[in-house]
Image (tube, rainbow, N blue to C red):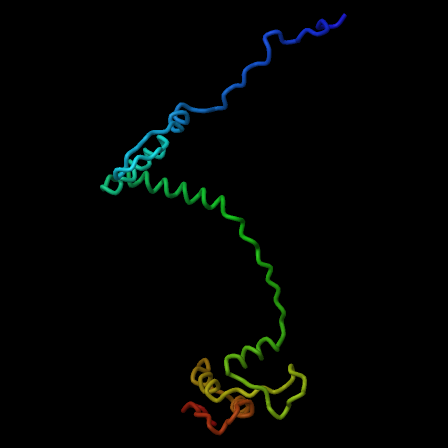
Length: 173
């Protein structure tokens, strides 16, 4: 024998009514609307909005409690805006190490230039001539140690117009 007769509902009282979601009394009151007059203009505001306007007005008048509340409202608003902002995309950085990177940077900064006599040669092996001003700037602060004869000869060899170099007084030239 079947539990229920054919055509008869298993729940004679019918479907239970939907329960209200967890809504507090404040939520119900805050959703109500008020007609508020501001500067002679009537506007419809929720109770929550009206309270926020009152708190803001009190803060402007100097109420410390109201100022704290306004600062909290600003922090909540900023947090909500941050959540709505699109996620920041990660930037994939790829680096390529080559002596040409440094060579190109020296050229862009007008510190060094390739030897004009070696045009057509491999760009990575072409001798670079340093500008005299750059060599002079480097020689002013050699780190406290004296340059050797070889270092001085190299400075002359790799400097464009090395005759115009002004040597620091402590060097042996």
